[in-house]
Image (tube, rainbow, N blue to C red; front, side, top):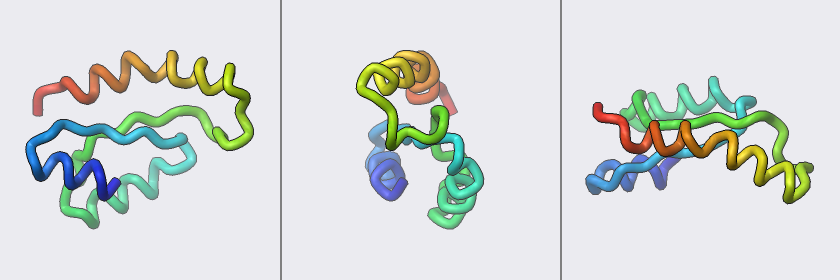
Length: 74
């Protein structure tokens, strides 16, 4: 999240991707960074034990949301 915040401060669009277990934590941290509207996309949890094929499915499923989020006008 710090990286995305730094990119945005430099005028570079950014979006972070995390598993849906971290929705509340993402809200709290982005607010504490002073950027509560930080662009974010959540994927199913957990991800650490997923196979390569499952991770590709997660990425494919999230792709449109990521593109839509990073290209959205404020």
